Length: 158
Image 1: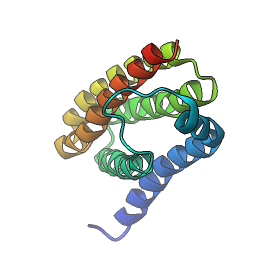
Image 2: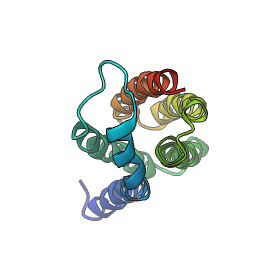
Image 3: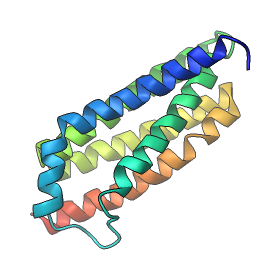
């Protein structure tokens, strides 16, 4: 790694983790209520799993974004990073819609849009840096699982 590349990696990882931390902080009361009052579907993991998984996923997302950023400027690079920011926006607001507003059906639709954005982002990343694209696969898998959990909560809590 070149001398200044670590700053790029640090920026993208910390930026992405910061978005996740802010969402977590803004939804802390809603998540506490969720843990105590909401009927959850089978296969719901213990609460401690979520911050661990999301911390790892945000790091992988940030590493992928840094790898894309470090490639030579191109339209694909710009499109990839633009879509990265859009999907991160959707990621951030899903938590608020789900935990704070408890709008489970709307959150489910929002999550479907996020899933499509992630899939498209992976495709764009692949054009720029295949490893960066591969680093997003765990994120897509987890959001797929989150879709199952979101749908279950919506159906179990009319």
